[in-house]
Amino acid sequence: MTNSLNYESLQVHAGFEQDETNSCTTAIHQSSAYTFKSSKHAVDLFELNEFGNIYTRIGNPTNEVFEKRIAALEGGSGALACSSGQSAQFLALTNILRSGENFICADQIYGGSFNQFKIQFQRLGIECRFFDTNNTNDAISKIDKNTKAIFVETLPNPKISVPDFERYVELAKSFDLPLIVDNTFGAAGYVFKPIEHGANIIVHSTTKWICGHGTTMGGVIIDAGNYNWGNGKYPQFTQASEAYHGFKFWEKFGYDSPYGNIAFIIRARVEGMRDYGCCQSPFNSFLLLQGLETLSLRLDRQISNTQNLAEWLIKQEWVENVNYPGLKTDKYYNLAKKYFKKGAGSVLTFKLKAGRDTADIFIEKLNLIKHITNLGDVKTLIVHPASTTHQQLSKEEQIKCGVEEGLLRLSVGIEHIDDLKQDIQNAINETLPHEISKPNNYQHKQQTLIS
Ligand SMILES: Cc1ncc(COP(=O)(O)O)c(C=O)c1O
View 1 (cartoon, rainbow, N blue to C red):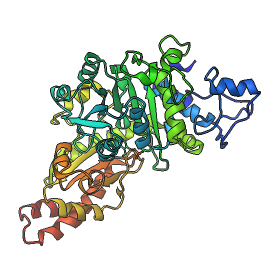
View 2: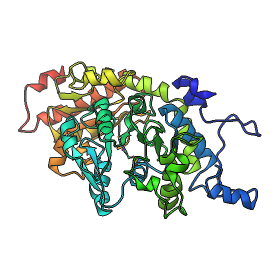
View 3: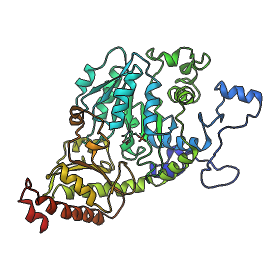
View 4: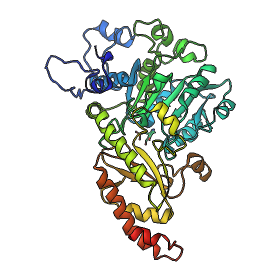
């Protein structure tokens, strides 16, 4: 009944069905395992002849409501809740990649993903080949017969760039490869819905906007149900599975199945999640459901605050540059207009003319804005990516990702815009006069700041 509803209604209702208690809120099913109705029932569940609860590592009724809701919001055929964003992308990629194979990935991505892909995957024999995010020809040059996926991120920071998604969809189609999008910044499909443009698999760190209150770690994989895993490139779907008593995932859950094409997400659950074990706790799913219910309201306010702050910051004498694709002067403005109908998200980066040392002092002088490495919280957060989120990258890799020394990242919250500006102005007023007293500082700023 819910799939014809608008986003704002789906975020409140999708996936929830009232149970015999008449409770109006999703219950927290804090149970590790579930009673089988009969011996046959147990066999049917294990054989995947019937869907139902066996053990919370594989599935849980509270997690299921969250999974159904996020699948509805992103427009997918199914979803799998994971313990973190890192585990969601790990499970999604290992669901299709084996040792000796590779995937290509845009070079502008979250620093933690970069590390997981470049170092940890390499240790497992899976190669990640990075390409220039804004150059599909570079992407093409990295593809060979062992390439199994293309991975890009929505609004990667700190450049806050906008990949041209439709070009990546075309590229993926022309090589018959799945396109995986880390849509964390797309905020559960409210800011951006990659599946509508043809993406095949979505991953999220639900820790961010979906949670929205900085309380809960989580991740999720969403299957668009639009990729043919039976095309011969993925034997894990077409051949008898050694890890699942000879089961053939594509045969049972491909396009011809009564459930539609859910082969990817089922395999991720019953092999990947079962064996790697990075499952979501039901309590966290409950909190994430609470977060989803107000997501659009929070995002509307966060986006308008971010746009307003970006326009204000760029006019300040002490600011060298602002990265925010909602600014008309931004390199990615046209792409942002094309893909993000609600606005360009709620993260911007900016650099003080006075450099890294001043930026460090400035952060410490902020009062309302918190110095925290998280995103999507209702509170405004600031961080210095070069020494935190992207610190593990080499200097060269940092430059490619746009991680400049002294560049600051603001994840904008729902506070009153005037209070945010005042907090920044106060911190600047306290920072720059102090800096100006240092020998190498530029005198011409003094009047502007003190006036
Ligand atoms: C874009 C993006 N993807 C993935 C992750 C990893 O998510 P988590 O911290 O939930 O593991 C993050 C974390 O900051 C992120 O920003």
